[in-house]
Image (tube, rainbow, N blue to C red):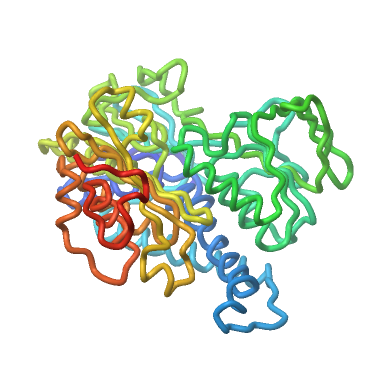
Length: 480
């Protein structure tokens, strides 16, 4: 399409990640003509450089590790088990390609036109597209949606080069495993991919600035991951600041300062994963008059995802935390419905989160400390996976679920779990919170047996002081 063109549309969506493509599909369902502009690949970071590829690699490493460690305990003997990295990456790429094709077909079925290139606002109702083939195009719109996602935070002096210093995008495309790696950042990506690397034989050292891994998460969940990393042989340094980096020809030297003072750490590679920021650079927000929160960089939105400019909306990681794909899905729907004039709001009590470490971590609602700070009479109990028949049958007894309820009214306040399949039933706890369910409501809900989801019902019974499969003393419970 080289040349200069002009077209108009009812809605322009900039960004084809989870928030953007769902928004575009919903616009099509509501009868709105929509154009989606994507600068790289449909599916955005989540599908191509984050959620999906990382979970594919994690799955493979768990299978490999289980065969080597758990298999002999239960009579499964697999001799000479190895990781064929080239084939693993080929399979991972095939998963991504299939998912990307699915998104493309869904957009086509919804009547959405997809254009590839860089879009930039030139006014509150116009944007310019710099297409991949060099063409330029003006797009006039009645409404636009910013869905450009997030970009990794980079420290000065630690800039990624794809060779010695890697970010997640580089790591997920790695074609040869290093013998050793430094992971700078003990957040979600650092813990998930750090465990992946350790399972497949890489010597891992993890450095985290805060006093605990996964800062902000329930402290008990953080401790579970710390213990798991140590079992894998990972050297974990919390409360440790990176002060400098030297790049040698075939390795890196990281200067750090921690509780024991200053020291240096060496490895073949450095994986930089210290967080993400809203990616709105080069969007022409000033020309459009769109306000951005000065400290966080997020685009300011209301409960209908509308910015301060009535014609422009924002969703996903560009709009506000938490930076989660499922939150972006919902925001995309809200923006589309708002543009179509439907009564809609982005309103929720809580957003569940899952961290795909081993053990798997899942969380929804408040922690006990947060509940205590908010007042009321919160109390928590913890139910062990070791009391679940399914956990024994699956050789996965090292886990637990804890429930936080309010003694004043019996309401569920939070649920946190560490163990097999925790992420598969956390949405039930989220529904309980959204519906203002009581702990007794959970206890009275019949759960299928044998499943891991029974942990939720069993924890509720324990909180009530009426447990069947553990003693009342477990978790320090008392009846309300």
